[in-house]
Length: 127
Image (cartoon, rainbow, N blue to C red; front, side):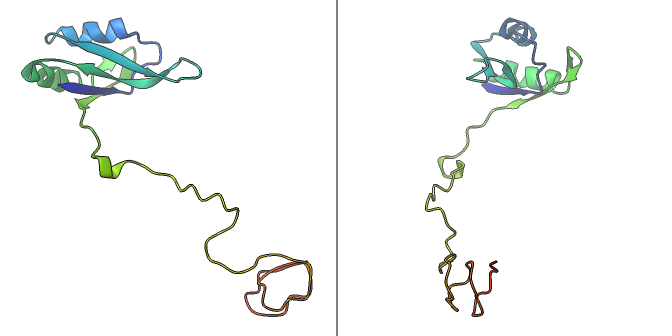
């Protein structure tokens, strides 16, 4: 069983976390997630326990427990379905997607913007 452990004190070591979970059964692995640039803990990690019953007992007992002055969050880790992964808009065109011209220096009455005497539609201002 893969177990998520959150709200960890930043000073906790993987050995300390392993010890807390070994009180409930065998532990295959412990991983505290760290920032790749600073190496500092991000305050959460994962514990892998081979026995689901022991893992559930650890979750039940440790969720909300105080570790080094912080109440930790412990629950079963569920992988995100592939379709729900976060994606970012990589639109690097420099403008918005609404269309139309947005700049210029002239007297264009239909441009929607600019620096001149814009008197036409799409009044977006100017100087």
